[in-house]
Every structure is written in structure tokens, then in C-alpha cells.
Image (tube, rainbow, N blue to C red; front, side, top):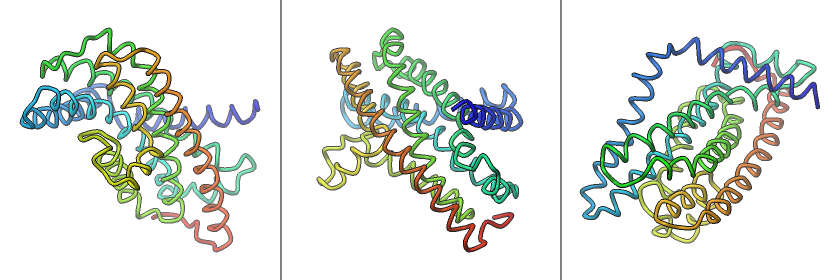
Length: 264
């Protein structure tokens, strides 16, 4: 257990070093964070033209919370970088194995996504005057963080695809994120979809946590937040199990076929 935690910690520190090498605090704050806040504000403004304050509020909350999902899914790119950088074959051959490295590689994305999404929930509703108080935002932060963790586990499962097919990284990332935006209640209730898609949405990250956050903002009981957090945690654990299984199978298949080459 100690050795496993050490590997995870090293992978997380490496991911954080990558983040610091990519961004200065000015670039991150005024480039990345500002861009995501502007995106949430744009969709919220569009929601204003749906004809009611409730619709605008629905869209604002959905897009502010979805920010943490987008950032958490960047783990797909982090894993693809291992292949492009030529370290993938070395990780697969290493005595410690590649699974823990992959699972810890993008943890920094969850932390930064949580910070950005918190900023969005604090700033954007105030700008658009949709009536969400800072104390209400503070109450839902644990659920928001769990959404990020759940999305990260989902991202690790998607990243297994780029272990074998590195050139597909942006297709996998965007398809995974757009599917969540479309089906998980960000801009429209999940109930508008056919029953099969509703079932799919129930197994994706964000759906349960976002529903709980919305319910609390609309005057629901704090106990509903706990229920939503539990459902989101269960979804995350399910995707973590999928990630471990598929990452191992993809790496084993690549090792047999000799397809874990350097580059894309």
C-alpha cells in the first residue's frame, strides 16, 4: 500500500509539474479561467432568451458546474502525452506498472477544475443576477469536488483508448465531454431524452451531482446533497473499475502486438 501511494504521489507531482510548465499564473487566470467563465456566461446569456428566469438559472448552473468535468477530462491528453513522448513502453515495462501512473497523472486537473468551477459558480450567477448566494455555493462544494473526481475516473477510462490509438486523443476527449453536455442535464433536463438515453445519462458523471446541486439551490433539503453525492461517488467508482480493467487490457494487447511504439 505504501509503495502504491508513493507511485500515485509521484505521478500526481509529475502532473502538477506539467501544469506549471504549461501555465504561468497569469496565463492560467486570464487565459484559461477567464475563457471558461466567459463560456459559462455565454450559455447563461443564451438561456435568458428561453423565455423565463428559471430557464436562465438552469442553464447558468449547469454550465458553471460542467466546467469541472471539462478540466478533469484533460487526463485523456495527459495519457496521450506519454505515448507521444515515448515513455509509454517504458511505463508498461516498469516493475511498478503503468496503472498507478496513469491514474495519478492528471490529478492536478481535478484540483484546478474544482477551483475554476467554484469561481464560475461564484462569479457568473452574480454577473447575470440569477440569485445564487455565496453561502449556497459553499454548501455544494463537496458535491462539486465529487463530480470532478467522478469525471476524472471517467476520463481515465476514455484515456485507455488513446493508449492504443494515440492520434484519437482529441476525438475521444471531445466526444466524451460533448456527450455529457448533451445528455446529463447541463442545458436541458435528462427527462426530455428517450428512456435508453436517460439510462445512459444515469451512468455518466455529473448527472446525479448536478441534479442535487440544482435541487439545493432551488430550496431543497441538505440531505438531498448527500444522496446526490453518494450516487455520484458510485458512478465514479464504477468508471474507476472500468478504467483499471480497460487500461490493463489495452496495454497487454499493445505489448503482445508490439504496437506501443514511440510517437503518435
